[in-house]
Image 1 (tube, rainbow, N blue to C red):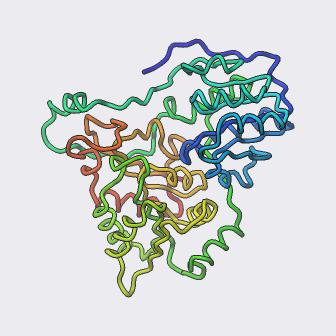
Image 2 (image 1 turned 60 degrees about the vertical axis):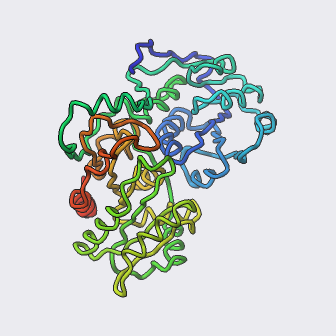
Image 3 (image 1 turned 135 degrees about the horizontal axis):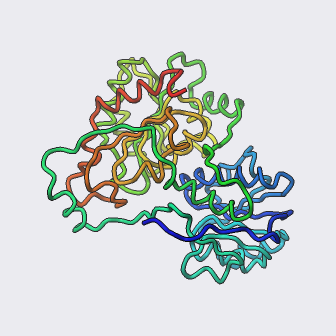
Length: 388
């Protein structure tokens, strides 16, 4: 639902910080979506020293990033008092808290950072010196109940219709929530594309390590997993059929990505695609975060579910093709809203987006997206001048 809160006006006393701490988000896709706000923060305070506090699993994401001077990381399970003690020793004069959790605000409060800026939320406002009201136009992502879903689909007869769009409106996108927070300390809130950085040397090293250097065929990426749950996963058999069709049309080399939890799924897809003539690299569970980034940057296009590597690829300049089901491209789609390089596919299923981990009915939102539609979108996105 939209908020009618008045815009927040920054206090002059917090507009000249020397040492800034940014408390980062804990999930890969969310972290990528904070990069426009970090770039705007750097733009506003070019001389300030900016340190990002991040989960250890995401620390390498920030190597070479122009908005970040240093990182501090916390381990899974590390208690709030230990984190705060390390922060206190750094003598920060301003903290910008990007997550909405009480813990993230408590960390900077216990660290004694004089100015603490973050979004206004229950159970944490007392830990902040400035609790920023919700942004006008903000949209809440609320899970639908099973009874709501059944009510929504009741009047509809027949299959859901398909649509594709790269022209999303930007008003509700999650990147704007983070930009709203940096605007509270005088930064420009105008949208920017998310941005990550890998070096040519990293790309060459990753391709060499995984046997991809010297391969003449273009590399297309396939990312069939999604940590959040099965409601975000286009069916494996459709990934297989689409990959066959795309390879037949383009002669591409497939790189199949996935985490350790995706090893079985990726193995199933690899086995179905494997022939003596096929060019496939199964990298599930094998890459570091930097290697994943480097290889995604080297791909002509990535076919993926709505998940962290989708955001990473787009932020590195790789076009993505994404079947959307339980989630919303308007809220958490890849890249800058409106970027024509990315093809975001969905049906008009009345129950979508439901934001559920598992579909309680017939999975019509993703089953309604066909192999032919996805294959056509990947071939179009892979064209050198696609969307430019």
